[in-house]
Length: 168
Image (cartoon, rainbow, N blue to C red; front, side, top):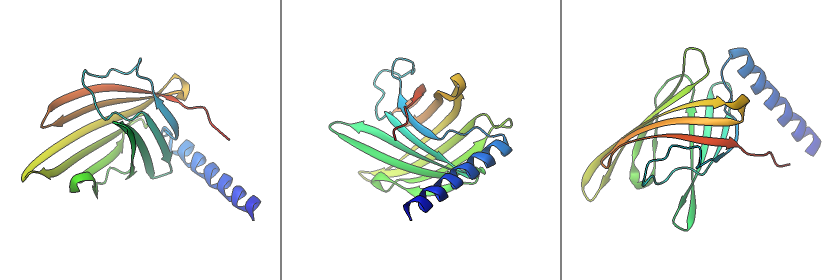
């Protein structure tokens, strides 16, 4: 039974890889670790994911982000369709988040846009962000050009993640 499950898993991975190769789109799948030295973080940057785990299929991408907050790690998971259609989720503090993911014309970059609205102390706040994902160094580096607007102002950063060694 275990061999059959493993064989099915391998077939599914091969199918996903074949579909990605046929569509000509970049595959961002993998485990990624933030490279602080190469990243362009602004002074006071908080809540930047130290780790990413990306799983990509033909029409979806799931990104698990690990953020260190004081003495605890927090993982958020977003699953987006890759067709540019808007999705909605409810997150921390009942924030309603709308987001889209769309490919560049050449299929080399993926742009993720999000807009969140939440309430705190009876006041409504809005945050928006744009992330442009691309691979560099023959797929060994994931670069995310990030821009966000919140009540605290505008922030821009280039986040650089190194591909983590695979563990068996």
